[in-house]
Amino acid sequence: MSFLDQQFDDNIIIAKVDDLFNWARLSSLWQVGFGLACCAIEMMATSASHYDFDRFGVIPRPSPRQSDIIIISGTVTLKMALRVKRLYEQMPDPKYVISMGSCSNCGGPYWEHGYHVLKGVDRVIPVDVYVPGCPPRPEALLEGLMKLQEKVRNESVIRKSS
Amino acid sequence: MKTEEEIFNLLKENFNDDIMELVKQPVDHYILCNPLKINEISLFLLSNEELLFDSLMNLSGVDDANGTSTIKEGITTIEGGTLSVYYHLESTKFRHKIILRISTPREKPEAASVALVWRSADWHEREAFDLLGIIFLNHPDLRRILMPYDWDAGYPLRKDYANPEFYHGMKVPY
Image 1 (cartoon, rainbow over the protein chains, first blue to last red):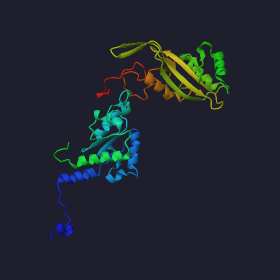
Image 2 (cartoon, rainbow over the protein chains, first blue to last red):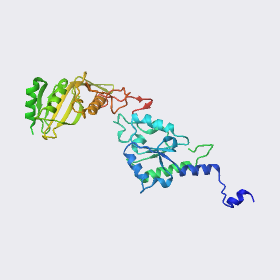
Image 3 (tube, rainbow over the protein chains, first blue to last red):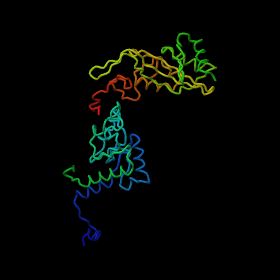
């Protein structure tokens, strides 16, 4: 008997590379430990024991270089937008963005008179999932994350899903 | 504990023309002062043994927008008039309070800094400079505090402020 037969018997699973990669990616979406405003409080609540982001494999990382997603949780000021862009650029591919809350979706309550607010983070970085709310409840953020997982599940190594 | 009138009279004795008037309102009377002498007045208020105003509770700038306003092609410009600064003081020993106000011309908004009298004035004055463009003379570090350091589109809380179209290639209006 060969080594493989002895060691694994009939425990070998055959899968497509796409499926395996996508399953691995969507099950361990490490996020940048980064919050901007009141939405960040809800994001932290989502991370805490009651809602438990960890069960989706979302673990806050202290460095963008170890992260897969960045959750833009709050008002993006013009001053901060340059830093957000830099953080995003420091993340390794494949990388995903969740825009959380009205402010980062479109400027929110600052859309008209906010002289200091970027009217939507999608003006500086590409956004995968928009989560509406002011701020969104943890359930809404979890829904947003599951939408992102759905997107990752349909990706291909040779072709990014739309 | 002293009333506003007593504090006003005491200041008037010591500073004459630099103390202009005690303006009475339903609440919160204020004393109008000379903007270029406000540092000396402040030092007196802090160190006089009958007053001891040791706490600057708040310092805020205001655009009075009392000049002549012209609207041309949707852009408002205000000429003349004043920018003001209000100082809310309290003595933690005597428990009396007073409000000072200075008004400086919009074209040359200069006031003496009180940052060396009360340390808490440091960032408050930077904020008033940042958002209204009031220049505090002899301030130890008069830089912008909230807006980006390289912001060159003016002072956002002035009533005739117009937002720029772009900042570092990012579109600013909605």
